[in-house]
Length: 257
Image 1 (cartoon, rainbow, N blue to C red):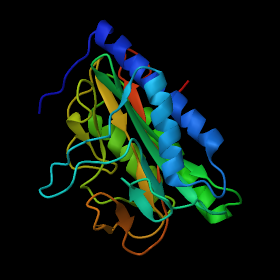
Image 2 (cartoon, helix red, strand yellow; image 1 turned 180 degrees about the vertical axis):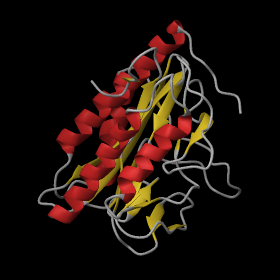
Image 3 (spheres, one colour; image 1 turned 90 degrees about the vertical axis):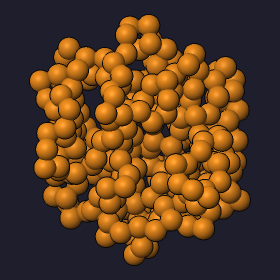
Image 4 (cartoon, one colour; image 1 turned 180 degrees about the horizontal axis):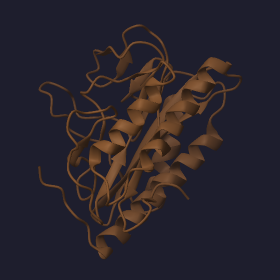
């Protein structure tokens, strides 16, 4: 495992990329309405990212798996039982949907990455709770994102909080990751309690922490497009992510403005 510690110049470049991601998500939240297509949302994101002089971190991304096509859109947009990596399309959002949008931006040689799950119209209380718990689990993890801790303290806090509500965590094939000059760097960051402590946290680490929470079982399948991950039981899933910086004190969340 080769974890890359960032210097102040590199961190400032990541702040710029992350601010673009945050502003893109704010714009998308304002654009969400019943009847809009996920492709229309993708275009809104693409135009804003371009207007800031950045490019999408996702467009043209090559998966490590064999025979999976390169990612064809600027964002990942996943609706209801779609957990992550949903490909924007002509699908129209309906009243009561929940929609997870993952955005990455690359500028100045560095990436920023974040995701939110938004409510569409009148969402029932059960699914509102799922979205709320997913977001709060991230902040439970942030309590341990300090140089006095090890990486898997973050993982344990996220997983314990999620499981206390009877929800499940996407099986260990997916989780958070380091981020910097490449979108995915070491270390891999699980969303559940692990047997070991993981690497010690150091000032200058930049991490993308992203709980993915299923209302039902943790089991999933990948659709024929090679990207879209859906729950096997058809129950809803939510996603929340930020790029963070480990400091001498409290973590700095780069993708919140």
